[in-house]
Length: 341
Figure 1 (tube, rainbow, N blue to C red):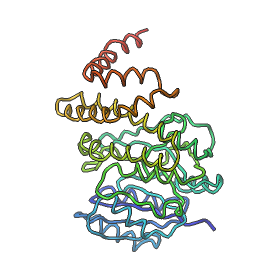
Figure 2 (figure 1 turned 90 degrees about the vertical axis):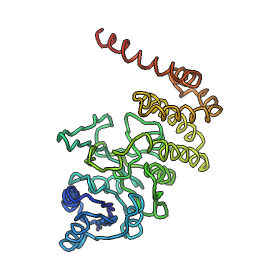
Figure 3 (figure 1 turned 90 degrees about the horizontal axis):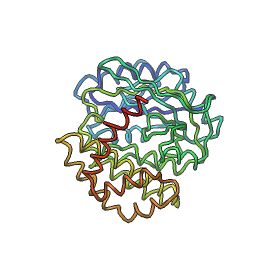
Figure 4 (figure 1 turned 30 degrees about the horizontal axis):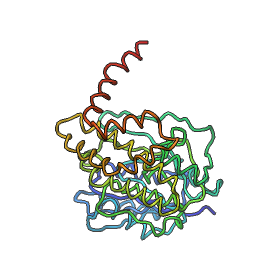
């Protein structure tokens, strides 16, 4: 008998997208599912759509609650879940029919507590589908140790590509039974995934893009002003991640996570400098980096830190605008010359 998978779907004002999402769940080749649709106080017909599916199929449960945001809806679903595995699907996305069978079988085969797959990006405005290049070893799944999986996740590995997003993962329910999403925050997946990874022993990595992620839905949280989101929620969560790893005794991984956090801040700085409307945020990024000056000096002595990153960090700490000009000059003059040659 196959174990039960609980799939939690937060729903908020997505009447145009929800049927496609739920239909993709009902069409799964893995049938032993508990599909929990959490209507987060929708003002459109989303709640009625949830009820309609619950009447049609006994595997579907419809829950209605006051609006509390994505994290609160997911938490409500977790409180109801009875499966031995837990998955998440956002209500405006959909999944390929073999996704949960492949992830379930990978977990069982590898004795892994988490399975991860790749995803496709969908632009609804143009109908364009962006499929990732698959660099992972051939085969249905690869078993990764906790250390290797965490390095891939924290250090932005190009072979085993693992993002924060919970919707590309299947979790053993016991592993995450007391982990919840922070309510009222964006970038909520960062700490949920980090805490789960700290507890696992093995991870099953699948090199197939089973999940279909909608990039440009109107009203999506991900389409809010990115500068505000990064400064308000994302950066504090990256800091919390680094601190949590250190508390778990994973000192080297904590330092590597910090290194990639600092690299990320350098990219954010350039992005924010591109427009007058966001240059205020660029100034806030330099303040964040200066707060970390002593830690940066310590970590940037490590052998895994690229020489180019050391040069860039020194420049942005001393002369931020000069760093921006250097990057733009490189993009304008050096890259075209290399392309011609």
